[in-house]
Amino acid sequence: MGKYDLITDSDIRRGIEEGEFKLEDVSIVRHRTGHVVKHLKNNDATESPVPPTIFQVHKNIIYQADLEPILSAMLELKNSELFEDLNERYQIVLSHLKYYISHEKRLDELNSKSMEALTIFDTRLKRCLEGVNTGSSASVEISRISEMLECYSKLSFIYLLSTWWLHKEGIAKDLFLSEKIHNMESLVKEVYKHVLWDNNQPLSESVYAYLFIHGGENIHKIDKFIKNDDRVESALDFFESYRNDCMVKSARSNPSFQGVNNIWHAEYNFEIAEMLNNSLVQIKCVKNNFNELLEAGNIDGKDCEASSLHKGDYLQHLSVISPQLGNVK
Image: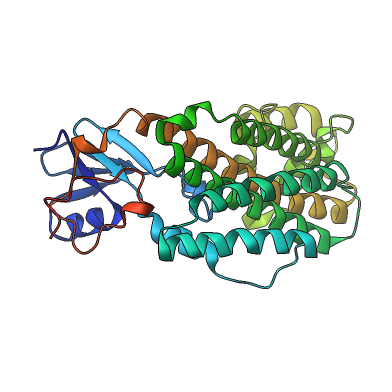
């Protein structure tokens, strides 16, 4: 009998259908005995190509993500707006990933090619982000930078997994990805905060003010944006500051609020902010995955058994931990 029962996403779906597990409103999947099986992560990451979580330990139950569909989704081709040289580098990594998924070989090459691509993307992205002109009309550049950032997150995830499969607990010694992700997050956040609210401009000229006055159904995104802006503690904090700084009082009429002078400029900044916020969510997913693999490094696969709910083949070369297979049907 193994020390841990290893559960995957497909096992969880089957367990919920069979009444073995139940999904609670507090974003927890729980066994019928009361034991936690999986914590569902931040809903902001639901559209992220990088999963918000891939490995969790709850007492004697280990959850690990089904990585094959996640990686296969990254292989799907779409119309690319990447610069030609970047697209070529990215496609080379995907080709190596596809080969490894199919044949379980050339993992070293997948790891080295993803490292090379990350380094090149990193240099180009820094140049693009530092040159973001919040008054520019080059909307095509927004979509191009957005795709570059998404590919950067995917490459980071591929590099992270391939490093784990090569070195297991030795991943703790890998400084390459942790430094790249930290520096990219800092740069994206710096540009993001500037776009949302230039400190040299009054609060009434911010994207927050634009959303409050003109945002319509997008007004809820104030709360979403604030999560990655450490200058504002909460949406309530913004509203109080806006009331204090931007309310115009008149003896002849009801108080009114100052709004942005340049609506087009604010709309453009809003578009950039949304793109950068999505990137920050993806970067946080990679960071969380990295921390989860550090924890996985303390687990011996010999202490794990596949769940009795599991059916079919177990893709051990695409698993965080390869279990003892005695329970697999």
